Image: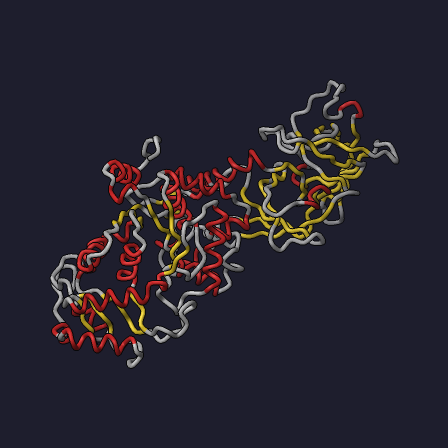
Amino acid sequence: MTEERSSNFLEEIIEEDLSNNRNDGRVLTRFPPEPNGYLHIGHAKSICLNFGIAQKYNGKTNLRFDDTNPTTEETEYVNSIRADIHWLGFEWDKELYSSDYFDTLYGLAVALIKKGLAYVDDSSAEEIALAKGTPTEPGIPTPFRARSVEDNLLLFENMKAGKYPDGAKVLRAKIDLESPNMHLRDPLMYRIKHAHHHRTGDKWCIYPMYDFAHGQSDSIENITHSICTLEFVPHRPLYEWFIEKLDIFPSRQYEFARLNMNFTVMSKRKLLQLVNEKYVTGWDDPRMPTISGLRRRGYTPASIRNFCERIGVAKRENLIDLSLLEFCIREDLNKTALRRMAVMDPVKLVITNYPEGKAEIMQGENNPEAEDGGGSRDIPFGPELWIEREDFMEEAPKKFFRLGPGLMVRLKNAYIVKCDDFMKDDNGRITEIRCSYIPESKSGSDTSGIHVKGTIHWVSARHAKTAEIRLYDRLFRVENPSSEEGDFKEYINPDSLTVIKNAFIEPDLGNAQPGLGYQFIRKGYFSVDNDSTPEALVFNRTVTLKDAWAKEVKKS
């Protein structure tokens, strides 16, 4: 057992179990995703919790795919889930599937029938729902609840043999129709579903319900701590009832608050709608809260693990601010991202007194925040540069410390320049800024004695490369789209993606590597997109340098 002190109630439970040598001192958790979609940031919390607890207490974690619904599950999702867990930095002990246990689960269901604790019901779904009663009124038995053990065994065998159509019969546990817990009012255990399964093919046409498969799969694997989200609290008595009546390994269920985050949705059903209805480009669209979307946007595994650790483990639901996730990625990339210059809304700056034919290489820091100093890079410089249009104003206000007529500014890693003149087109749009430079003001060896308050970034026009830059913002314009009236898709942020087709970037970015973070100086953090090629570079904005939404949220 670790000597670290527990940091949440789950760790306190585990430490008490270990001190009492419960389960022979073992800790075995599991992460049981249903392969019916891509994992999102909420799943990341569960992954970090299950794998993290096992690591802390020298235990293990199984990856078990809850593949009991063949109509919604695909191998594509299985592969994506594996990739996401590996990317987050975790390794599972065994890769298992609920479908591995179909024969065993069938046998356990037969055992309950033989004990008189399960029966086949021919009622429709509507009839069963009505007979269950309400939270304030007891349920009533359907005519099929009194069937004999022999009849139920034969009918259940015929269900397995495929003799009935979908919906004709179900297998129900016989518990208590008057229980105040609706989950104990003879819950469904099996339903008929003639559908091809991604692993078992057409062997089965009956499939176990989640509440029956889940606990028994935990027990089969000897899971010591089955960690679920709070919506499964009312399911726990049923989880324990099945284990008790079947007299199998007593796995124990514990619940924690799931991750709810503002300005997004976490429902797989709603995320699937966004994909199918083309509101996003796919599950890995960088605006999606999916792990693959965050990865494509430029988030790092460390930032997501840090985020999950910061929000902690609670027993009460709450809404986490997306700004905290953005803070975590800024904090991580500030230490690791390479500094580079990119101009997104360019206007040309011409240095009129720069010697003809002169060529210079300036030195720029790779990352001044890096522990090893970060090193430096070569930046070509010449008489014609691209700068941001917003860095020039024809009629500059008093506290505008960038370029304007007669104003001086430092070019990052280069010289101080003074604006002498500018040119416009027929529409009054600035087309060229003409400056003179101070030769003695070179960065690192400045002897000019001139001090300026502003520094702007630039790219040499002769050496610049072009790139497409995708500026991503929050997918929704309201904090909690699922709680608003009407269709949640009505609240999609129309400005969640802005595409800049021909930005200018310094030549070193032509060798930008996927998976690495880059800080475009004064603009934000960026990463190479999957669509990028050496001939057509594409960068995604991971996050802005500062939280631009903080004031907006405060206003509303």
